[in-house]
Image 1 (tube, rainbow, N blue to C red):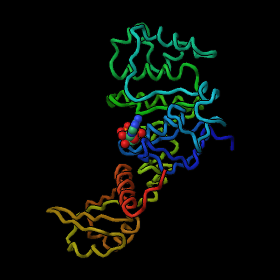
Image 2 (cartoon, helix red, strand yellow):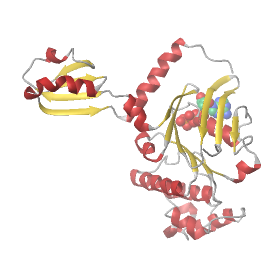
Image 3 (cartoon, rainbow, N blue to C red):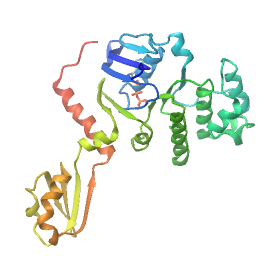
Image 4 (cartoon, rainbow, N blue to C red):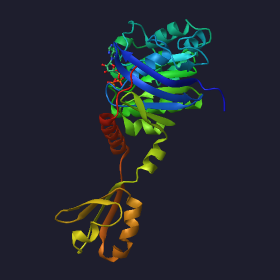
Length: 305
Ligand SMILES: Nc1ncnc2c1ncn2[C@@H]1O[C@H](COP(=O)(O)OP(=O)(O)OP(=O)(O)O)[C@@H](O)[C@H]1O
C-alpha cells in the first residue's frame, strides 16, 4: 500500500476548553474519496480546518508526510469551503485563468471550463450567475492548479436536485484523475454513491468508518408487510420480530433481521398475499447510529482535552 495522504491519530481539539473532537483516528490513501458526515455542530468543518492547518493545532495529524499546512501539502491542496465566496466581478474564464496564473502547472482554462460544465458561461460575469453555477465556479477555482487533495465542505448546499446530480458526476470525474477528496454533506443518499468510505462523526469520535454497503449489511433490520387471514398474534414471536402492526387491510412486521424473519414466514406463505419486505434506509441506519451514540454518551465520561 502507498503512503497515506492523511493520517489522523488520536486527534483532539477544543474551542475555549469546549471539546469538539475527542479521539479521531483515520488513515486516507491516495485517490480515496471520503464522505465526512455527522449532525450539525459535530465538528466536520473543524476537522477539515485542522487538517488544512487553518486552525493551529496539529498533534496527531500528518498530511503529505508533514504537519498540516506544510509547503508540499499547501501546493497540492484545493479547497471549496462552505457558502459562496465573494468573487470579483469578472468573466468566468477570466477568473479561472487569473487564479491559474498564480500556479506553476495550472490546467488550461478551457479544460477547467469543460470539466465543470461552465463552457457556456465562459464569458458571463460571475455576478450574474445562478447559485448552482457560482458553486461550480468556486469548484473550478479549487481545481485549476491540479490538486492531489481536495476539501469540499458542503459543496452542494443551495443547489437544486439536478445541479446536485451534475455536481456528483463532476466528483466522479475527479475520481478518474485519482484526486483524494474529503467531502462533507448532509445528503446521505447522494454521498453514498461517490464516497469510497463514509466517516460518521458524532460526539467528537467516529461512530463508523467504512463502506456504506457494509454498514447496511450489518444492519439487517426492516419491515415486512402482507395481507393474511391469520391472526396478528401468529407472527409476534417469530425470530427477529419486534413489533406487529395491524391496519384495516394488512399486517406490518418490524424486524431486527429481515432475512431471519422471512425464513420463518415460509411455512405460512400460502396464507400470505401482497408480500413486501423493505430493508432499513441508510438515513434510518445513520439516525439510529447517531441515537445509539447519544445513549452511550450518557453513560460515558467526557475525555479531558
Ligand atoms: N471559532 C469557533 N469558536 C468557538 N466555537 C466554535 C468555533 N467554530 C465552531 N465552533 C463550535 O464547534 C462545534 C463544531 O462546529 P463545526 O462547524 O466544526 O461543525 P460542523 O460539523 O461542520 O457543523 P455543520 O454541519 O452545522 O456545518 C460547534 O458547536 C460550533 O458551535
